[in-house]
Amino acid sequence: MALPNHDGRCGCAAIVISPHTSDDEVRRELSKWVTKLPRFARPIFIRVVKAPGGLEKTGNYKLIKGRLRDEGADLERVGSVGDVLWWLKDNEYVPFGKRDWEGIVGGRVRL
Image (cartoon, rainbow, N blue to C red; front, side, top):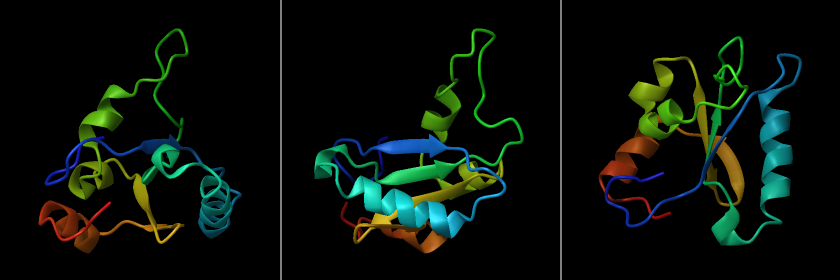
């Protein structure tokens, strides 16, 4: 995914969490797992899809990723559909907020 004031792209993944699972538990386990990957292979952003049916699919059960890619990490666009963003900060996934987005847009945050 391309970000303002940053060269290149960063990794992003979308997940659907079971309603019976704690977000904190998933973040903790995902953080442990992802730190075993090489730095270039770690997704910086995780988008937690809250839609009742999960990720959108075509009639052939292929995932529709275009909308997710176009919305990127812009919280106004992501939050409008009820999804949540986490980002990898100090080797741990934490909630991504408006201040974080403003830091990226303003060029104050290095990824």
